[in-house]
Amino acid sequence: MNKALFLDRDGVINIDYGHVHSRERFKFIEGIFELCKIFQNLGYLIIVITNQAGIGKGYYTEETFNELNEWMILKFNEAGVTIMKTYYCPHVPEDNCFCRKPNPGMIIKAMNEYKIDLSKSFFIGDKESDIEAGKKAGIQNLVLFKNTDHFKTIDDLRKIRQGEYDGK
Image (cartoon, rainbow, N blue to C red; front, side):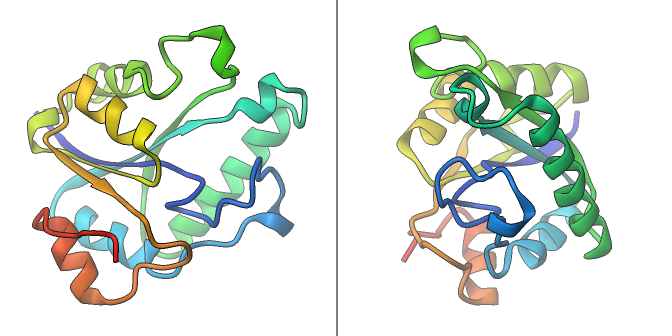
């Protein structure tokens, strides 16, 4: 069985300006590449789990999202990090979709596709809905990332890996 580091996108990988869908508005959070390298070097698969209601609201298309996602993955690759896959839900909350966080659908799909042991995996999110989705899926190591723009130090990265990070 594999283990994974699941990451929410907006608010964890990039600053959440609200419905980020262009390179011009996509600013990586300081330390995200280093965090992912640490986990990758420990044998974790890196997987992105993201709600993208902007698609369902008509703010941008799936094509626009996919183009930005490919660019984001390229930037991770350039930093020496492999993103295995990005799972996204294009629905609005009113759709009550099983894939939309706080439901665990995207995590369960990733678990089945990559044979992931969720008890040995981590999920870092910036909203309670991320944490709730992780709990519903059975992820044991959940981190609510409260900082608005960066993982401050290598010590933060160590704390996350050890499940001690408090987001401050």
